[in-house]
Length: 335
Image (tube, rainbow, N blue to C red; front, side, top):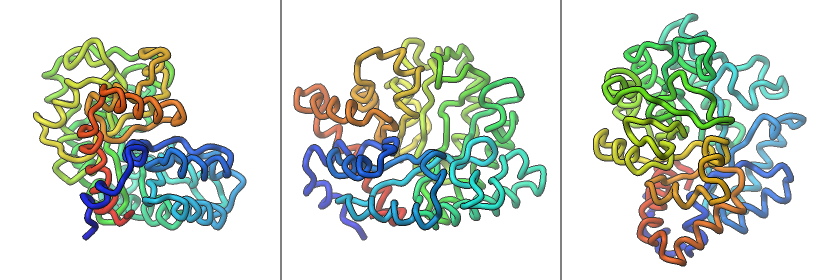
């Protein structure tokens, strides 16, 4: 069994802070290798353009180079939800057909088809060196006009709760890290990639509807909960959920989640419009996040380091999150 406490004791402050970041992979291959070693990052997120014009052999070699360069094996993450949001499978060099959306899969063969597809997807990704899939989406939507609709399984919380347990169990069986998202439930709100979203639903609505799938996912053993950037008035009317201590308290204390809490991308407009020029990663750590998803790692990592050195963030707070990240990496065979 990997001794994560011994690993933590051997790490510098720079290595500890770097482990909290899963960054957008730089487009330049040399720059990517430099980022892994210089910052040093906990992992990379790959997008479709990282697969386009490459072969599976190219990707395997590239991922191997990151593992070789890193002191601790990195997360290699993708969004492969199926349907509209996929990365590698949209290119024929990697797969003849794209992975289907959860709604289409269920129509074909119910939860058994969902389970089989999840396992096939895990095998496909692992073969390419990917160890982390940002899935499943547990948001609810019944409005086809809404941004999130075609990424959701259903508008029915009970059906989505079964879906959550099915996918989380299959991913855990396959040793593929997953993140249930977007807590506490995106709803039919505007796209936080481009705007600040205000959600005025009541706590009763969340408890009887949107939170049900997340509770099921947590009970099934979800290793990560990814938090949305919506401003949820009944939880915290002033701060995006991903940066709100109140939302993290709900997740930790009320729902009993003891795994890794992760932000959605800190470079989305819902965050940059809120924080302005301030580095959002500092507030993200202070509010209780363990993993920070971002593109501007060269700005965010030094900001967190400075905050620790200045006493704004305690090193104990950093250690708490690093231990969760190391435990997760050990449990899934990454380190």
